[in-house]
Length: 117
Image 1 (cartoon, one colour):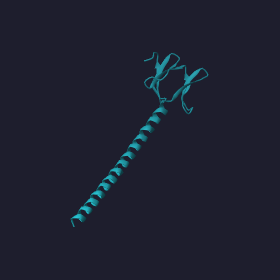
Image 2 (cartoon, helix red, strand yellow):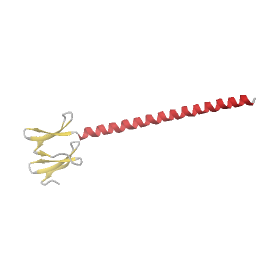
Image 3 (tube, one colour):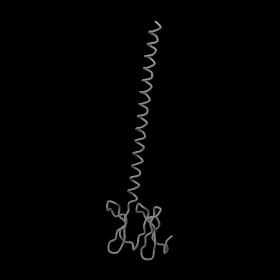
Image 4 (cartoon, helix red, strand yellow):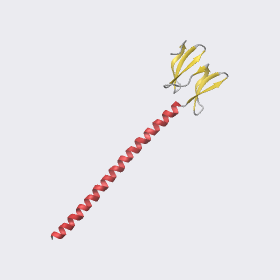
């Protein structure tokens, strides 16, 4: 009888270890799925940010405007000058008046200032 009990106990202990390993693997897989979802969300956000930042100056009839990477006009070419973006904004000039535009194409400071800020 003691030999059978030892064999049964050994089998039971072995099955418990297998169950623990299976539970650990399942939880690890679930955690990896969460990380994958989070990484995808981060990559999507980065892609959107890169797309927003992609505005390009273009010239038409001696005036400047801004287009995005899909050639969609974000600012009509009415400006005498548009500076490069620095810290998310660029100054623009019409005649002797300056204003500022953000990387989305929104005028953040209207062009009624006679000097650059």
